[in-house]
Each structure stands twice: as C-alpha cells, then as structure tokens.
Image (cartoon, rainbow, N blue to C red; front, top):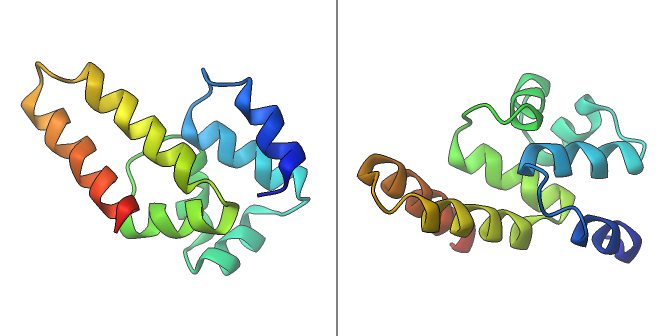
Length: 103
C-alpha cells in the first residue's frame, strides 16, 4: 500500500475494515469492478465487503491482498477476538479469519 494511504489510515482506527477498503479503493480511483478484477472476486463481493457483510474468507483475503491491507485485517480480527471471549461462536469465527489471513 502507498505510504500516504497507510499514514492516513493509521489515524482512523475506529473505521471498519470494509470502510478502510473503500477509502483505499476510491483513493486509487478504482471502481468496485476494478478491484473485483484485480482480486478475482465478483463486484457484488467487493460491495458486500465494503458494507461489512459476511464474505467467504478466501474472497475476503483476496480483496485485502489486492489493497495491501492484510496487516490491518489481522489487527481488526485480533481486536474482535479479544472482545469476544465470552462468545465461543464469535471466537471461533474470528480465529478462522485470522488463520486464513496468516496462511
């Protein structure tokens, strides 16, 4: 990811992962269909990801890789995991996302 985007996003930690992805996509002057082609996913999946809707982990990873946001994704899910200690279903979900992004 370009340093200027990374520095700008560093100060926006309260943004969702989908919102960060949308900001970067727009800053690069990419349409959703452009990102979809680069990430080998459908435009509908890019739209869903930007709206923080559930997405297949492998497609989510391809979008994050295309945007250079893997480390942001790991941090996002690690934060979610830390807050889900009492919810075993959510905990398993976030652990799966982390494993997918690490592997």
